[in-house]
Length: 256
Image 1 (cartoon, rainbow, N blue to C red):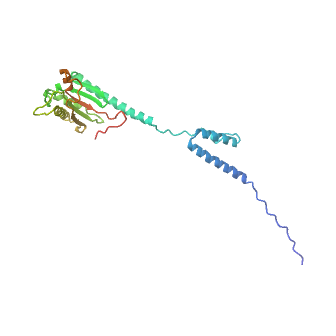
Image 2 (image 1 turned 180 degrees about the vertical axis):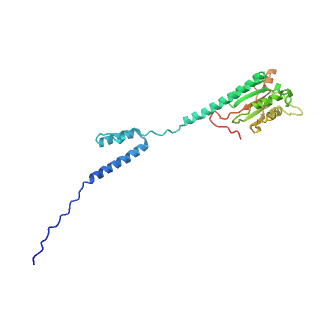
Image 3 (image 1 turned 90 degrees about the vertical axis):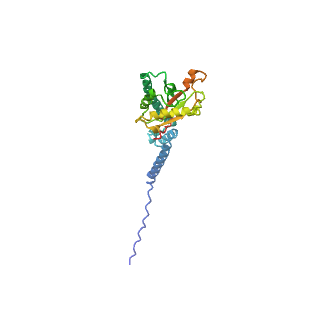
């Protein structure tokens, strides 16, 4: 019996290591990508420039992905921008009050009331002053009949869109008041303001919810009470047309 020839054992093929090079390149690129993403998210200009130089050297001096300009950061509103907006609103509202002042002064000129009326812009708003000599008799709070139309005509000038708060204030001189009707100048000043307010709110275009009244008696003089002329100036009714926006940008609520 013939013996089987033993064949030579096949030597196992050696495993190729050629895949290691592209794998290493891939890992390098992924690492570079993550570094780029991290650096971009931080928006650090100096960091981006350094990384750009490093990667350009690695990739043989070519124009790498880091050569492009850094991402432009989104503008974030600053406090200065907010202050500018608030200031614009205040200036715009101030101009609106000045327009109201022009209309009131036109009314004063047409009716030749320059000696009895006055207008002035204040920090609290537009102030319209009426000397009480044309409205009231001494020691009285009822308005003279011949001047009743003034309240209604003035009310027509005080209808605004958007609406504004209006405060009517009474003032007196320092001559003591102690009558059967009024125990003090405080009482007299309050009732003069209330009576004038009532007449203005009889105008159907006026919203009474926007009006309020108060009195200061003799305690807020604008002239010396030592002279007749000074006392005449102190006896007055003031109409304050309030702003919609304060100087700090705060909006005033009208309560409507």
